[in-house]
Image (tube, rainbow, N blue to C red; front, top):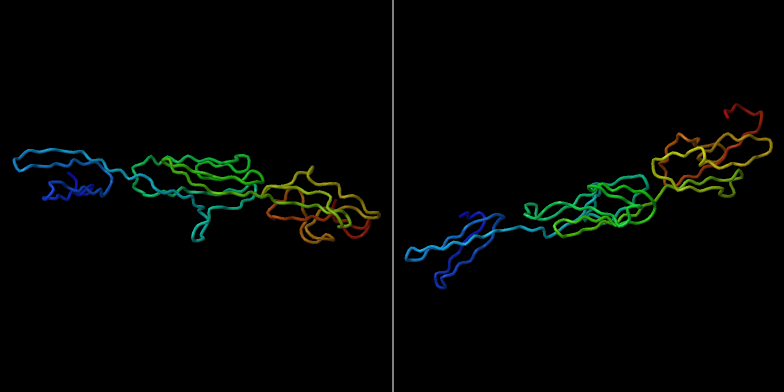
Length: 219
């Protein structure tokens, strides 16, 4: 009844026919005998999903990667790419994370929450595809007054700021006053305080002391 859905090829020698599915849909095949009698058969053609892959929308590599590294606080968008596109299967996508405390997922949006690894999975019509996520955090290191040792280390989310309690006691140097934490030694680089956003994967901060009565300074 619809040759776009199935084609019918009769074989006169065997009185049989070959039915070939062409596209999804429902048709009725009618056979008519030489004496005018007819018989009908309903044929339903389905196009089930046969493949599924997860793709990072920001990944331009070829072939696309099946894993990514993220920093705490960052997001990543995954899309579930299934074939065929004209499937008759239920295309509802169910997302899940093997460790939601490390990386959560909602409608393909992955959010990095803490250091570790997690497998993001999507299931469509009984077929599952996975994407591996490794989450790292930004590391902030505070150096001692003589720059010789580390006095504190913090794992911090990308884009976060530090609270006043996060900053350690820098110690003291006789005859000098503490002016603040800087990204380089001897007060060079940029000053770092509670309103600075962390965008460096590795950040080392040095305390800066100035001799009392020398120059101008703001405490």
